[in-house]
Length: 290
Image (cartoon, rainbow, N blue to C red; front, side, top):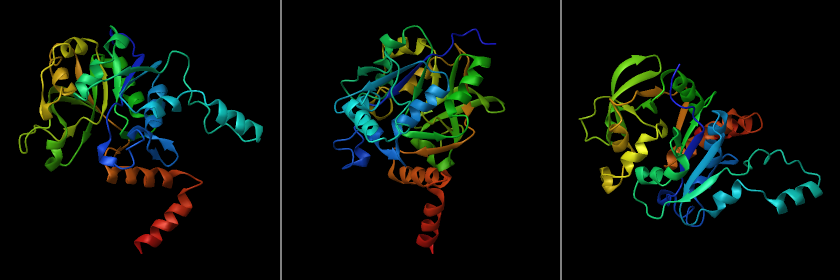
């Protein structure tokens, strides 16, 4: 049994501009793009709540008011639906308990490490999860729940791990692996976007982390890394060898909804799984593909 503190808090970096989805994201946060009928951010929040997270922390920027409104009470909508005898089932459970979510601002787009650091006062001296909402992880139980179960056993720091094609390793944070125990891989090193041909494995980090609060102290004095940004990967690397550090391979599907192809694939895959949408969507796909 781990001696580390239990995990109660989760940080969602949602300050990005979403330029890859322009013009759709000109006036709407990219995290509010829907997969079937649910915004990306809601999938991530539900994943965190399923894993036992008690406090949701959004690191936002300008133009994110729609995201904040989504998790608030909607008096006009709820009153109108009730007056017309319509069920509120579709929106029940979205509203969070008082005091959660908490919203903090990232005033400048200085990188993921900087975004996480902006939540330091809320995180305090507790371990915390980080979830990147444009990485849609689909499985039962959810990715973070799987990681939390492992965290109870090994403690320390856990990061998501997934295999990618060797020719794509220069696009991601890549793990240098040590001992392997089922889905758990000892992490000897993490390198952000290594040059082609230099990666020590094809295990990438797909936007799910459980980190100890010491990483915030490292981010107090950040070093600019890949892309001229403050990289969370670089700060995590300084904890390796000082605290337990493992990668956890997800038993489920990953959809990279930060790109248009992955976003379309997620819509199709999740629609096909639904009883109300699967048959007509499958029939249409067959006709479309001839």
